[in-house]
Length: 308
Image (cartoon, rainbow, N blue to C red):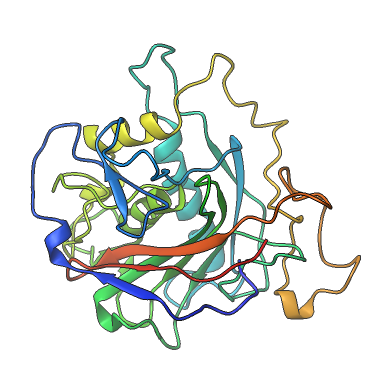
């Protein structure tokens, strides 16, 4: 979540970014620190100054906003969100050290805040919020969902990621029966979970990270070889797997279920997240990138602000 205002530079990147439907395992792309956008395929990349976006810690927290949706009650929403992240944690990577990707996303419980904000001086949460009443993003009805990532422009470290689901504009379903499926929530959430982890849109039409969703499809629920290559390259297995019982998933500046405006000093936050800036340390330059599942192939990236 973020507390400071978004500034003026808005970059809209359209259909020309996705022109290939190749089915090999090198069609994946990662979001990056560069204004031009994504880094595709395995490294080395053309511009060594561009840093891929990633979480630097193996444990990350996520929370579903407590109101969820009229279409998707809170308990059902939580189950789908947890399942979507498990899809990215379970592949076996064919790397020097075989094993699952070295990343774990843990549910930290419900939160009250429904704002998309990152707080430099207060507690935070990586939130999944359903937008029943209205959808205010410029791409309007084309957006099925949108993930906004706050990151350090120097290192690519992700500080915060928030997912918005457009229940105002799309009829979501959770059924496994193809005759009942409209906009499959698990498919959409698995795609957005990829963005949450730093992946960009893929060039493989069979991949979960392909930018277009076809109504009634369950295909994006299951990672393609391209998606597995992407997550394994971003988070290669460690010799010691993530200890999910002991690792620290708290956000920077601690966890809070409240928006910044309702937080007071010493209240509403739990602990301090690993990597929180200490006094006297350099202040990083932060930026935002927004990526999502769309009806038309569009990627919207925004360079936003300075902050901590």
